[in-house]
Amino acid sequence: MITRRRFLSGITTSLALAGYPLVGQARPGGKIAVILLEGGMDGIAAVPPVGDPDLVSQRETLVSRTPIMLDGFFAMHPSMPLFADLFKNKQASIVHATSIPYLNRSHFEGQNVMESGNMVPFSDASGWLGRALETALMPGEALALDMPLILRGTRRAESYYPARIRGGNKVLDPALATLLARVHDGVAAKSFADLASRYQQAVRKAPRDPVSLAAYAGGEMARPDGPSAAVIRVGQFDTHAQQGKDDGAHFEQLGLVDSIFDAFRQGLGEMWANSVVVTLTEFGRTVKANGSDGTDHGYGTAGLLAGGLLAGGKVVSDWPGLASRDLFERRDLAVTIDYRSVLAACVERAFGLDHDQVAQQIFYQKNLPRLTDRLFS
Image (tube, rainbow, N blue to C red; front, side, top):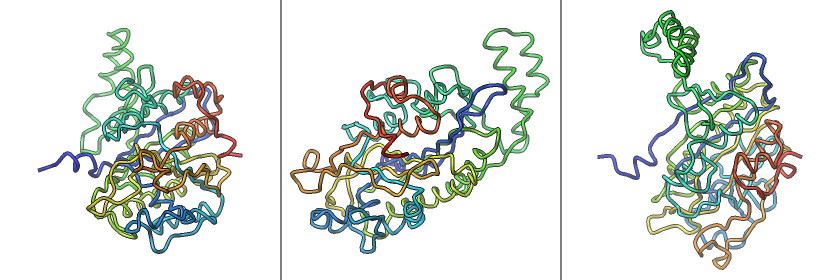
């Protein structure tokens, strides 16, 4: 029997690419890759504030014994050595005590909010990255089994996923599709014309495991006619039991994320210098362990960023402290940085858009603080 929790935190790795250039159309110069960490990543475990005097007393059973020091206050979990190296080489940064400002701690609502960028769950049919691509004059097309919410724009968007089953790409003969386009008009004519074009494209065989998917996505983004955005989805961060210190399911997933960052770097090649890869999760975990040596749905977490566009090697944080009196609702890491500001900075820098335009049109928040200089200068 598949339980609700297993359904929510099961293996959900998937990849979507979007922002393919059209002939003669302006395009942004930078690239954005988003790693969706579903289930709620424990930011204190991933980037422990070892300089906080209350860290050990608040979560003794969850603190790694061998953290990788980043500066005098923050460290990296030992399952992420590749990201730590990127940080030390100024190609990665961290934003801590941050989250999207969503407070209800529901996976369904939180994941919808983090993809839509709208703080009212299930109120928007488009996603923040899709709106960013539209604003940057990029077509709303995704190479994916379906169009994920985060990549949907406000206008009609197309999704195409070339089948790998024998004969799967011969479901519709291109000549028949062309004929159907001629005898129809309006939306139907355009749809058949699009199908005729797509079914003549060569099928690029994509792998299925998340690290290979990231390398594949990076390689596609590095192509002159490649996409400007990629989204990879990784689940299983909802660790309510036996989270562990230096092993366990949560930390296995952190190691997977570490490899995904490195795979994007290798796949992008020279384009890495003009890219930013950013994580996004619906919420963090509780500061204290629960009775099952796990953590429950929390609020504040950490965001991980890497890429040549960054002025890296820094932890951007207005640290609130881990003393019980400083916790949000006396249970969670408090949030001092709106993570939408981080995403807005990535869009501004990679796509060359104005911050005020990004804040209002993409995140619907006129007074969203600007973090671009702290992250990219």
